[in-house]
Image 1 (cartoon, rainbow, N blue to C red):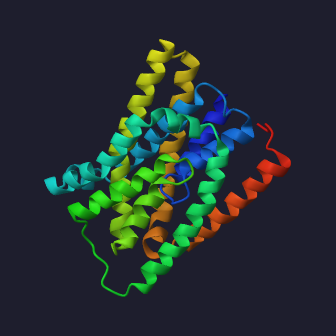
Image 2 (cartoon, rainbow, N blue to C red):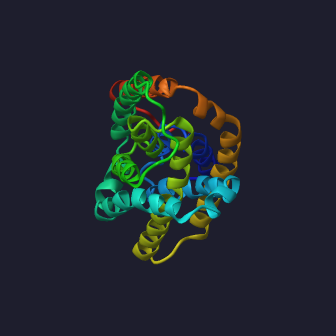
Length: 265
């Protein structure tokens, strides 16, 4: 990986982290096309570059994050617990999936179909949409989020869809998904950094630069995306993202089996 590739992947992360399209999936596709998916730093980079996006959430929503009642933090903990436990015990399998873009293509396609069906369910349910998440609903959201350990599924998609299936309104669903990303990505990043350091005994100066560049790019890109496009997410259907996932998944499946992506950058 070179510096330009690090910045490009950081921009991709910032553009896709908060949409239900899978930021990790898009970075895996991009890294595969660039020919750097097998680089030893990639498993670390794919997770740690999300830290920059999380910092953008903390920067933009600091009042809502740090001045909440205790039940808000308890709900975040309840939702984070399942994926934290599963991620800890399945880290080796997750690393294997991160190196196999075929899982991303299939996940994008299947996830797109699920988004379309979830939107139909949400629209047909005419009861009043709930603006508060209960502890039980937070736990269900946490269980759904475990599916996002599969690259290409999308953490945002699983949390938002689980909210929609429980008849929670879009604004609450999106903001809860934002805040839920903070502890999960921070813990995942710290674990990846810890594992990488003790496996190789140290970081090279270039590796540190690559991680910093990627996170800086994802931080500023995320701020722009959140400010300009979150209004759309809160007030519109997610079907557009469903169609996008289906088309993207099919396209790269065809590329994978017929053309085979080659290094271009």
